[in-house]
Amino acid sequence: QSVPRDPKVAVSVAEIEVDLAVVLAVAVPLVPHVPASPTFATPAKTKSMNTLIFLGYGVFEESNQEYCDYIDSLAKYIPEHRIEKLILCGGNSNPTKNISEAESVFNYLSSHYQLDCQVHLENKSLTTPENLKFAVQYLDPDDNLTVFCDLYRQAKVIWLAAYYLLNKSRSEIANALF
Image 1 (cartoon, rainbow, N blue to C red):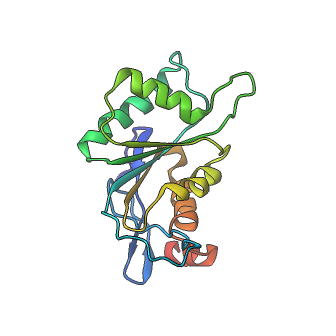
Image 2 (tube, helix red, strand yellow):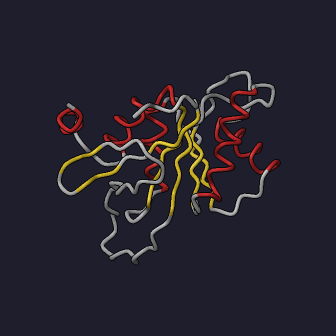
Image 3 (tube, rainbow, N blue to C red):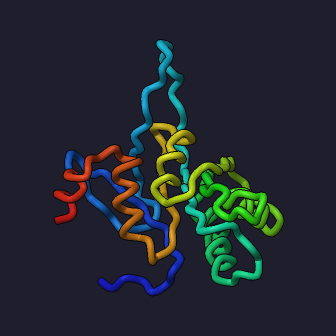
């Protein structure tokens, strides 16, 4: 099976039974590891939501056609896959701009598309590992999760998602892959 040439692709990671299986597919459920609440009360059972973590790659500018295409593919993906919660990731990576990557992507999306989902801006991260690490705060244990990234970073994102979102050790990830 050949790898798609399109640099824009949604990557999902799934945990199958006891073993970690890394699957390159669209909308494969992920069971995120969400840290326990520090409260003694039992949280109410939440409804399973189709959740998407979008990885930003710099402060968005409309003059960057490749970035426009990447975000436009996200906008198309959201209704096609019934995404209910969108987490836009990316902090203030450009000191000459007074806006985060997440905010710049949100501004473009909201001015060009109607978003019929919850939107969370994760605007502290500066790297791909931080994108995923900081996105966890917006996840619920029952979320069906998709990580949206470009094809060039796909392998890296699979490893990082297994580590930060599935709470797998490096050796568990390596053993599952090799």
